[in-house]
Amino acid sequence: MNNFMKLFSIFLFIQIQIALSQPNLIQQLCKTNRYQPLCVSTLNLDPRSKTSDLQGLASISVDATTKKTNETLTYLISVYRGIGGGREDFEKYGTCIDQDYGASVNRYLPAALANLKAKKYSDAISNMQSVVGATGDCQNQFAGPGPLPLTQRNKAVHDIADMTTDIIKTFV
Image (tube, rainbow, N blue to C red):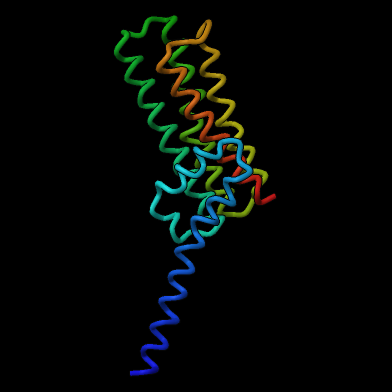
């Protein structure tokens, strides 16, 4: 019984140390990120972060960026369908849907995740920078600031993609 208690105590101690170190890992990773509050909240929201290493946290960040980008793409599609979609609207919304967010969801983000897993960090950074650029390209389709809900969504995707780029840069 005494050996069992010793082993159990050691096991419990190790588990507590792991649990306590994860928030510190997230804090350390996000400390130098330009989007520190977004970084901390994004990573802490995902239950996988409790047991992830730096590589895992970077993957979680790409996944969160993919989710936010998909939400904005879905929003753009619904707005475009709702306004009837004349030629001018197609040029604005269609470009955002097909060339900007469509390319991000179908090409850049899957490539970023694959490159991250393959430890091709420079390529993953380039993929994420393409997502950041796509938000600006979409915003530029509208003369002036664009519709406020779209501007806010573009900014949200821009920020999380840029945050993810910063996270991946910690590997190079």
